[in-house]
Length: 189
Image (cartoon, rainbow, N blue to C red):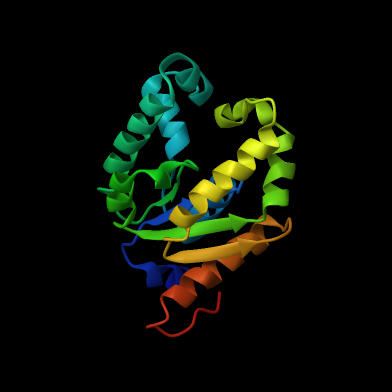
């Protein structure tokens, strides 16, 4: 658990989690928010709420461009608030406009090993519109190559090479955030 006095080191800064689909942004984000005692939002869930249907339906009926526009609208609204933890969709980093919103806070890239992401996604591939191809593993590799330069713009990079407990992952992310805030004394949660 992150002690309240440690959580205050972030002051009013919002934490944006970025990374590939299947990197654990939503699961980690909810737990990190709870430990920081902050509200949590998931941009994908909010897009579904705004659209009144699933992301898969948006892609199928209105296309990826429409989804990306809704995603940007959601991010624009969230960026007006502070002291949040936000899990973003995997492709949110592709639009330069989105970076203008992401820069309102601290971006944390969950840089999960490709084989680990594939293991996670292969458990439930039907929920990922961009992987609905004859060769989803190749599609995933292509997406990762395309997006990596954008993810690398994050304020904080957290490499994840193997499955770990959620509490260990929260601590790993928190330590990386603290290292970024190095102008202050080191964190010791």
